Length: 472
Image 1 (cartoon, rainbow, N blue to C red):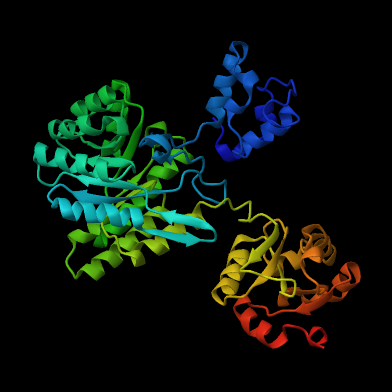
Image 2 (cartoon, one colour):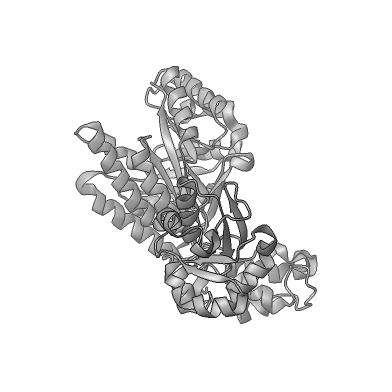
């Protein structure tokens, strides 16, 4: 079988209907094949393929295009999360899909006030990053007491406090079922099947239609054996926990994660082609003050996320632990082929009037939000003209001729700025200084060359705005 990165549009095209009907949103079947090869479209978007006469072709395409790592869903409604669904081992080969899910643990031995406080903090923990809200995703309820009543009570309490997906962590099938019946409609992930309890856990997964984690710490051969057995039993939605070991065991942990993901993506080992679970919370089993344990957990989580973990179960709720991790996740799961961009156009910052400055920037998300935040924090009332540079930063866009005098002149004209302000001054970024002369000729506006760094915009405006000609 071809690996995902080896597939060409031609291979896919020969199984498509070749009607060029346009129902998929593309003009031709070849264009649709190209999108399928790039994982930018789904087979279901072609209505023709769903007809009975194309059943065999659909099956062949599904086999060709299915991810090396199975996609598993847990949770319900719009809060449901997907783990796995990876086509390749490394991000530069093809875009990663389904960002790593981060779950925070709750123990059934905690008091109800403590449980409520942890869940509330999890729900409130959010960061805005280049226009996106970064949040934690799920709650892992751990059975520490071994008591079915206590575990069930804790699970039910968490379910009432949040609509986020649940991971039920218990190795005793009888205790697990007592809690599961309370939240079966939430489709939790059951953690976990082992060599001792696999049959009973398989019965729960099948009976309640929930995905199941498989736990075989430090033993990949056993992990494969359990997967083979569970699949033969009828359980398909699985996630793998090969064990997370703190301290000196971390290197073995990472090695196991890498070997499993390599086997799935490079060798197409179907028995290991499932989402991986990492448990950085084990850092809290080591000796040391809480701050050190939290730091170790943060380091472990970052390493495991980088090395293919699809689900992380963590303990700390400190912002300094999660902010770097959430930002790192955002970067890993950004399509490396497509710069993160915002919509081009005119933005109104504050309450500008007809004499307020006009600033120009690009639609690269990081550039735009940096400029916007610097201007807003300085309480500058202005117009911000965002030019479409295909998501490139100022310096890259100028060098690659994605930001030209002609583009800026056209953007000024299309924005309606000439009706909004009386003056005819535009402030361009310092890194685009070489465009100033040509821009003045094309637009008829005077051009002021602003600072290279947007943090200097407030100082620049206090010294240069309004222009002396306007004051006179």
